[in-house]
Image (cartoon, rainbow, N blue to C red; front, side, top):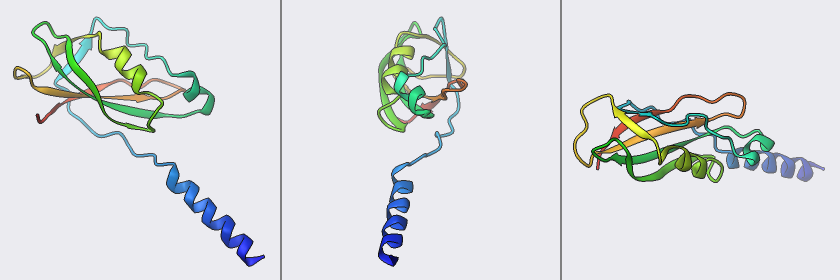
Length: 127
């Protein structure tokens, strides 16, 4: 009986380790999307499983303010929101909110919540 209780305890603790819920990184905005559909769609799988998360994107801006080479840097949980984040923001035009050098890499953190959508934020990233 004590081995059964020990086994249940170990399995319970290992389940807690598997559900890594890291907070989204804090970043400073240097560009904001404009002329963009901000109504991020939450993937059905995330709604069904009631999963909240975030995606960190890196990108550069061309001379007209459109993102170039947008890529996912990190996300949590992985496998839920990356595709939606790229699809939503890769076609947006951005306006500079601070001085941005040519080919400077910026970051944008998108938070996804099936109950309410939180606004994006973006930051300068070292090349």
